[in-house]
Image (cartoon, rainbow, N blue to C red; front, side, top):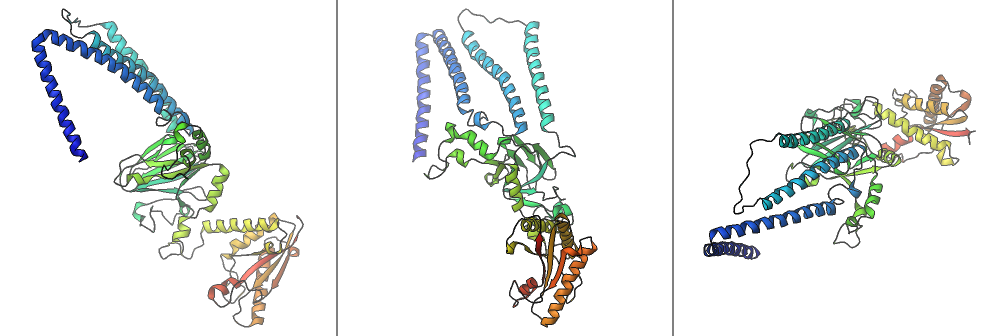
Length: 502
């Protein structure tokens, strides 16, 4: 019904316009064509001047009104180092083109008024004017040269790649219909190799080469976390169609093209919390973030930086938004600690893991970090339960005291720990499960603890600091009724007997 009414109104307006034109035509015939034409010219000229004034006022007022909401001024100023330079280029360009815009619009409508057709007036024609040619060619050329040179200088700075020795975080953004995969390097700080032929949905979504050690600690993040004032290099690519990596608040925008890797380097300078503080006192950000929920936070409180796709990449284009958090270095480091390697959490130990049976460098490094984290905590504690630590990655051949090859990594960690804490004396305790003869188990546990002691002394740890004890099947930590429980009970622990540093 509404559409029908609108259609009838439009038809009626057309009829009215036609009737008015007919009336004007009849009136012209009555008054005389020449007089009517002059009146029409005068009326049109006046209205064009009025339109010019209203148009220029509306342009300036709307720009001032929306500058803090949509145009990147005020609280929406650039939040990156290079973004300030880009904004400067736009401001300079706006200054000169704004002058040209106002002058040309004024002259266009003013000349339409001043040189309207009047009785007895003839047009002045001249074929050539050198001065005029110099003016309208020379001035624009000089202004354009200035703008191009300034823009080129900023472009070369903004688009420069990082140096080989620069302190930089490199991440990777892969766009696809309809999301982003954001890949971070692990503790090694290096992103691993990829091969599109290795892509398998649900198993290897990015086509990472699991035989490349750099891939073993890489992880895929749900959000983009970045430390403030730290240079970031983003590898940008796509799986399927053209996408665009767009961070509006950082003035970052780069196409993600399948098969053509690109990059963008930027340094965020304003944390998320600091940007929210910017918005706090701005009237445009005081409303509720959800008008239908009176308990929802204000817009400034709910603000987050975001990554968007700036290409129309398909029907689900809108869903490619991803939250970006800029935080302090300490918060960033804490976030990194919580992230898990995609390979170790999703691929390691599965039938499609190409490294089955191998102990990887990333696992060795993680074992070392875990060991020293527990050791450092134990060294600063006096609580009984804190000064006994299990050597989690020590194993023996079945039924013997022969250490397996991979046990040396954990034992080397213990050597490094005892070298670091020179005033510490420890007890090395061996335990078994309850399978077999108790006396044999006791003897086996003693032999195993002595094997550990011998390994340590052979590498320079004084025997006077070490005591080896076997406890057999005593003190189980888990039930011996299950294979998993028995495996946990077959263990080597060490207990801090003396710590002169406390």
